[in-house]
Image 1 (cartoon, helix red, strand yellow):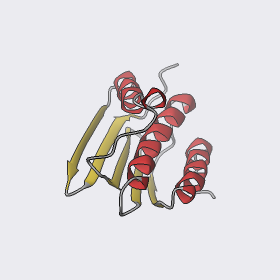
Image 2 (cartoon, one colour; image 1 turned 90 degrees about the horizontal axis):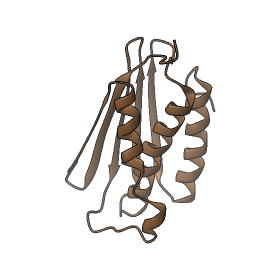
Image 3 (cartoon, one colour; image 1 turned 120 degrees about the vertical axis):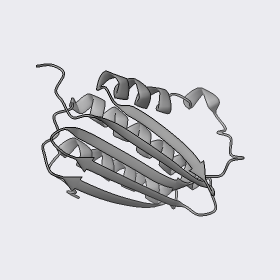
Length: 138
């Protein structure tokens, strides 16, 4: 599956699509690409992994198993939005293995002068992650 020109994004989406199928979650992805990805591949991989993993996990524990991911890549920034069904009363069974995803997302956003916001409305969880599309090594 090739959704965009970035191999890392395509690989993460391929893996997460397989996982979503295992949890019977309907994963929908939309990508708008008008510039190259300059962000470090490792950071991008960790960011996408955690955003999508959180979204799939929450949707899998809900009655309506829907997860929508939108990625906008332009020369200035990358914006990742997620929308998924959410059940407020859900608690993860093995707490030792969970709880670091949002912390990792916020750390990477800070590194790239970005922002992470989230909200819940009518049992739908919304998140928006935006950060500068830049190579910090140069």
